[in-house]
Image (cartoon, rainbow, N blue to C red):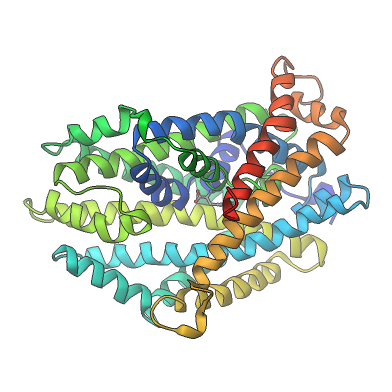
Length: 453
Ligand code: TRP
């Protein structure tokens, strides 16, 4: 497909909302609060912000530069710029990673969808033991979570087939503002509870004694996942940016939104949890087991308030997950459509089919199905580990190495400054971070992922 009939994002707002939609997802609202809870609250939040500024933004700009320079899907972009050297493999690995992440990410998105429904029909009502049992029953069921996960992929599908402007951009412009409104509703409800001040203090008053080497590594890993770095997602979106998009300011704005949502997510959860005296260090089950109980205890006194807060919360998670799923789906769809010369519709159906298949097995691996457990972990946890801890860091590492050590510096400089139209004052700082600091940090995350650190 020639570069001329490729579509672009229509407006600057579209660029920011679509890319922020990719970045803001379950990573910010599900993963971040429990990591912050486990690592001492405010101190971890500061650490995360530091990682985003020093590591996330340079990596993001590197991926943007590759995408916008090449104006093509992730696989061809790296292929084109690597002149037939093995560096070209980065893009292909990215496409594969995208499909694998979609498969298990949709499972969690599906749980959120089910929890919206369950809140609405009054199922989220009971004691702490009940919530635990409820989550275990639902996640282990053979039909319900599979249905919801596939529904999420199918909704994603119908956005992606409509193309860049009338699909992805339009959906982001609708979903992102809704997400913010819901987020603010829950934050206000949570912070107004009597006794919420202890939770607010927990979010803003750092206790550095809680920071360990593990917290730093967690913050690094979280930076990657929450900014969608390392698999060609940002590269694919950047291929739809216009020539006058300022890559640095886009990266700064998107990171700002991502940080803001993460902090607001913490402000949703901790004040409510402290108000009812529940410790928020529950790990991954925080939002599905601990939180329904928190909502019920905190808001149960006023008729329907617990249901309304709970619906707002899980609906917000669904929206956050959908905009991220859209970006993941698009990586595979753009690749098949452009490289295999098939229509966008057909390409999207193939991606939807493969992702649905993966998500069926990932979902079924909960519950007691031994045939989907390997070496002590569920299939789901293996997908999470292999993509999150191995493939993303490797993808991110090779992307920055490729951009800063292999590609002609002039190309990156041109992308950074829009061919000299923008000021280049911060270019040396960016380049230094991307060339030396980022690779070292990524190697640290990677060794941690392998359990070697
Ligand atoms: N960033 C999203 C989140 O925070 C998830 C996501 C979307 C992602 N696209 C990605 C993660 C690409 C890694 C790579 O939930």
